[in-house]
Amino acid sequence: MAKRPLTADIVKNKRKELKLSQEELAMRVGVGLRFIRDLEQGKESVRLDKLNQVLRYFGLEVSAVKMRREDE
Image (cartoon, rainbow, N blue to C red):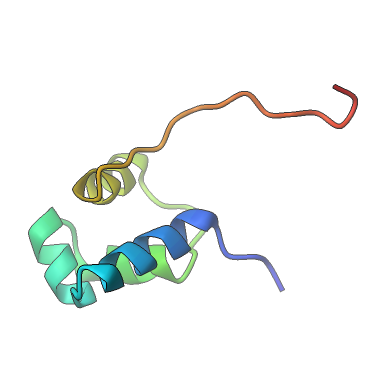
């Protein structure tokens, strides 16, 4: 079984901290309910602009970071 992406857990936990339903978060952020559901369930391919739209609501954003290699 594939592991859920970290962003799925972050979004779900932050939403629950604020006591928001998926519907409320979708409405406040301006994305569809289906997008929030897919995101929280760990869908592997989501639109980056919409992901950042959701993350910005929590004061976060997706960014590129240098990966560590085992030989470094």
